[in-house]
Length: 432
Ligand code: FAD
Image (cartoon, rainbow, N blue to C red; front, side, top):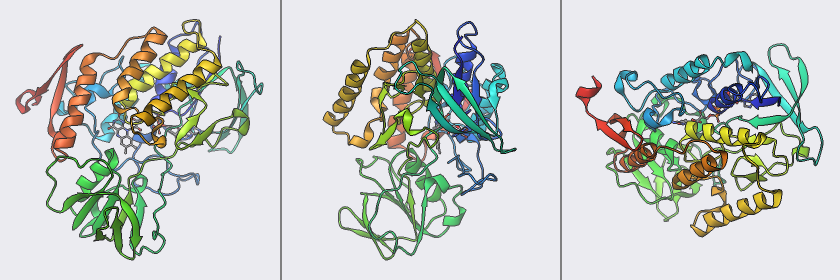
């Protein structure tokens, strides 16, 4: 039986534990290392910013009023959908409700027995350097007692989360800017921005969501980004601008040469991929936000008994994690024969080349967005597992369009999946 370790007990680590434990004839009971005292990762909200009680950086980037930007009808794991009638029938639910869902998932599949809490993975090293069949030496530290421990495993799933370490672009003049500078990782609630002029840099989920939220209290909000402007009606005190070229005193100088005076600059510029526990012998590097050397954004091409779950961005996270874990577990058994190392490398080169030809910048190596459906279906076909039901894709795409046109109101809508390839928008009467 294969002994498999999992780093992290967020959504990705939980699905790994669930699928590993579903095959007791093939896999030994999984061992999940979690540095926090509880499951849920990102969905464990805290008012705190900076360091936690162990002196470690706060992991979660959750903010107090967050409601999901995806409807719960498509967000859940395929074998454990969100309860349709709960949450007052809403589709876009509060972060506490997602955490409750993850707790129910862990309880349904009895997963907590596999998790070592307050146990931080400090070092991972291949047991046999250069051997593609190598297992892993994992050193952990118990945060409560300080005790270190070393254990050996046949395979490893890295599920440490990718929304914790802020990516901050280099903006000339930033050091001299007299106002407040923060990253969305440290944003918790809007009140501190009451009456202020704030510019948020970045037009993806966090930039959009937080700018709408702070516009309720701020004097003026600028959402600065380099994508085509959203065709939405914005609050009177909010406007979209192009990106920031530099800061000059209390002004942001925009890429079109115009200037706006601001009190606060918030970076909504995403996160870095970091794996501080991987020793150099693991041979993993991050170049232009691409984790290398990976096949299908997942499997280490030189050490195929190591996989990284959840790297792709702009996706349906929970279903994707489920599919990635199914794929990796199939590759550990005779259900899936991975291509040769050279073929895996070629596939990755082709994948990046295709993105560049589509006009994406290099740092979009793990961006999926509209490419996620073919990615998902490819992993499903190769691992002999279920494809994505068309209704999920259709509802996801519909919500994407609605979000672009109606930033302030799209979360008031509710949906129901009515069949493998159909969904409906429901009215208040149905919800109540
Ligand atoms: P995490 O949830 O980050 O879990 C990683 C776990 O690994 C953590 O518990 C951490 O403590 C642990 N860990 C890390 N390093 C170590 C170590 N060295 N040793 C031991 N343990 C370690 N997704 C949606 O589907 N819908 C949404 O509406 C949505 N909104 C979001 C809003 C925000 C603000 C953010 C930041 C993300 C949002 N997401 C949303 C994406 C969300 O991140 C994913 O849904 C998912 O929860 C990520 O799960 P994960 O397991 O990959 O990572």
